[in-house]
Length: 152
Image 1 (spheres, rainbow, N blue to C red):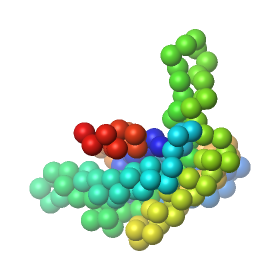
Image 2: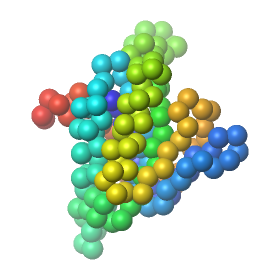
Image 3: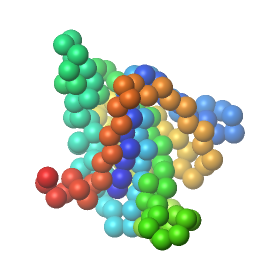
Image 4: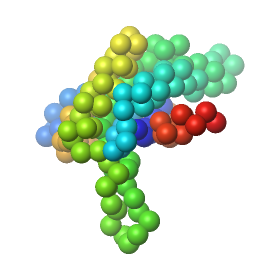
């Protein structure tokens, strides 16, 4: 699984002009599911995300987690994180899991985040979504569950 985490002051997602998910201060998470991904990948990413210390403490140092600051999370599915652009100019998405695999893993990821007690909303899997955000910092972190498992 791949995620792009953006620290935001606020974010929202719309489908057909209607807001279907939003968050205040916290994280906007773009989530891609690959062909080889399992529940263990979702668990590893969730454990890392909720503990990431990227919010400033009283001294202005990034030393607090999303939980520490009472933050919120908005999760958006994004298969394009698995774009392979090595050949030609049209990305290939063969490494992105098909919906039969990615939908259950996406839903599991969302439930795992919700189970931490962090207020969490999400977009609509497979929909044409419009995402608005106010990136805070900007702080943007990219995580790949395969890299986490290497123990670097």
